[in-house]
Length: 546
Image (cartoon, rainbow, N blue to C red; front, side, top):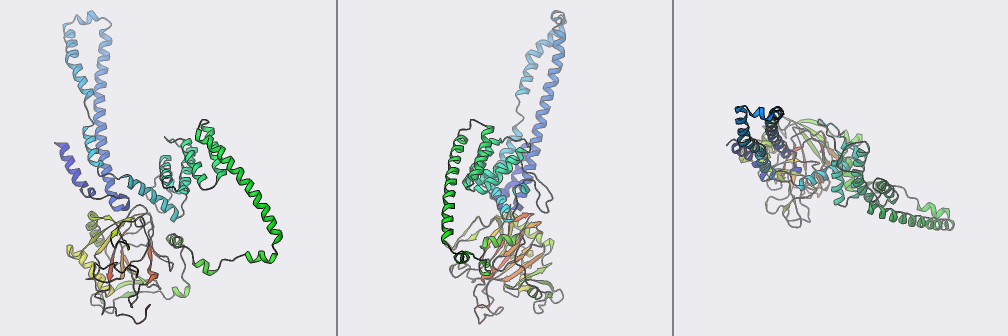
């Protein structure tokens, strides 16, 4: 009866998890797994105590009989000459040894196994483990972290430092290897080898690690280094057949490269004799400003995430202000104006401070958490919503009519922006997972996706309002790669920008991204405001980019 009640309680606690997967995409929902694991540990300890009690009873029985039989066998006939001893011998062998057999055979695992079986159906999947591993690799690249920094847990601002074992490093390397990502395979197999060399005990042996490491290095074209590691492998396991074959192959390839290099050197000498100094001078090129501006978007995005973005000139910075804002003496803001500060000039991005209270934040999170599902993106080809690897988070949608707090927040957005929110999308709440991010994207529909928001019937997304509902220890900035702007999360604030010019044309400088969360838990909520209803609130401009 007690077990049944416990199981029912556990089922009710985990009910919200049953409809969800992709745990790695939301730190908020991953916290539930900690409580699940805690319950499981409690059940495991109960099982251990039951086993210890059983063994203690068996031990006491064995000790008692050990002493008794030692005495009895010294004078068997004299011992059994006592009628009570004879009776007790019959009783022990007929009854008590049978009881002992039942005790030894009794299964104390039932409760623990039942609990484990119930909980296992709510455990993360292989996809979650792989997703979390790939998130670590993504963080490593974005924030330029070496494997040792991550393995030793020396991340900025961490409260709960955690070390990675050889097995952990090896697992990351294997996942990278399965994705044909030999760069990360090398990094993490090298880290596993380093920890083994330092004396860490592990079930993973050096031969296995060296096998992966040498192959990953070879695949990146570094045959000489691959040969060195393969020779080291053979020192540990002289009978390793694949390594023997690889040594011969690598030595053959190195010899070919050497001959090719010698021939190339001779050819260069011949060309050098024929070329005049003037021709040589023409080949020299300097990095132009235009070339510098053509840095790939991915690189700019990662630079901004690390805080290495473009700096505003002092003249531009002098035009950014902070102020008390009442939106042209809005009656609700006259006596309590909002603190507003300029974050960027083009596109114009503003931040509102103390715009949402801690109590409101907790209410929004409370309403959203049971509904969190893997965040989706709009597929321009199908016109449907779908999940994507470049957006790692979970989101939920909250409507104003289901709770007064949401209606109050929606009204506040309308009061501050002066825009109609009845035609806006519902409040979207998002929680980012391990390395949670949203790579560069536009909020508005472009001309090549004319049906982007057709089903809504409210036109394009004219503006974006974004609440920050948590501080983030490291990472998690909102960045605008085209202009070099970085906006860092600050709990209780919100940022706002227009996605469309007053003419209705899209402002392509608003292309933005959510940087991966390095340390911490990032909660945001946003309101996408649409064109319909703004005809008198934001009149159409006469120029395309006005």
